Length: 482
Image (cartoon, rainbow, N blue to C red; front, side, top):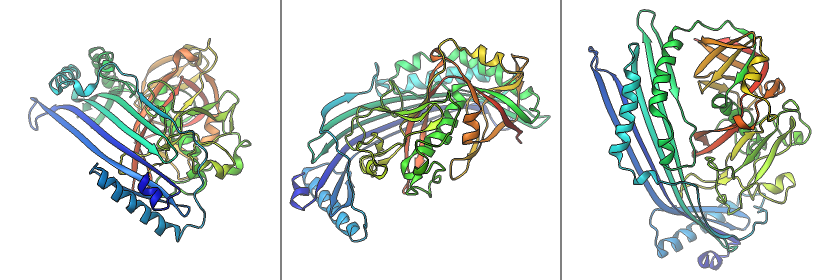
């Protein structure tokens, strides 16, 4: 801070961060030319430590970073950031304006009981092997795999405005996969067990019921292999949170990032059809559809006490009773839409990355407390229940899309029937959400998360959760996939 002030910077902040990521995986498949199983373990453990400095000089940003965390290097990098800012100022026609932010001095830790990095890798491999072997034991199972991922972020933020904040965030993720093959008909199907990724410790792994779910997906993947293909056409859909979360992410989450709406972000996954003139006026859903952004929901992947601008996180409306009402913003964006406060959506994926606007948790409000999943299904004569993520595609304005899934069940006469295969649904964002006529109550609300959401150049990756209850959508176009 002294160095920045000496060099005439009007603002300065520093982030010192230690990032650790551990991936433990087991894959079981036949040895080529044999029925003998080949068990392959994979272990990746990464650790990164360093700092980044931002400054504002003559109304322009400057940034520089280093992995050598010493007083001398911090002073040198601060001077380098000032040099970058001065060079940028010669081309910057609009000075940076930061919304006011209180100077907090706090320490915060995400909620966890057991640090996953304290658990020996041997125990993690044993758990994954036992589960993958249970899946592979099925007669028609070609292969299986299990995966555990743990992330730890320990970061300190200080600013020339007086902020001093340290945060420790621990996240846990797991997947168990079954692959069934019908060689005679040249068919292959996959079924996943994917517990929602959460900000949680190793205690979450113990609650995942590995054996029970291994047996379940072993049976379901065989049913999927034998399931008849869907008959395409307009059908009612009941989407479980494991599927709907991705649709929320792509259609509402990305379209309400302010930098996309303004055209500042375009090359990485496009802009947005929700331009600033539509805020407060555009109907993008039915009257029961309300979505909000937040970084405060317990165990959410984007949950933190403060963003990377030092702004205290909060909850804010994005869609209210079907009307688009709010964007995700940072301190330097708020004034661009006439707001006086940031929504706390600044994030950098590393000490060496520049913080910019990233998606928070974006969630759908649940329906009436008395509405159940059975009620949603009972109201469908010809439709499909969809579970889990599949392939997807969406255009550069977050408008036209297609989504698949991991498992599909026919609904006929208000009852859930057997599995279908080769299903995808297509729509336009406002048409899709306007067709929503039923949402299950709070008892069914779940967080599902995404771990590697890319944005920016050079690209950065962040994680966020999308909470929702099962929801029903009327007369959505269903297609037969390859």
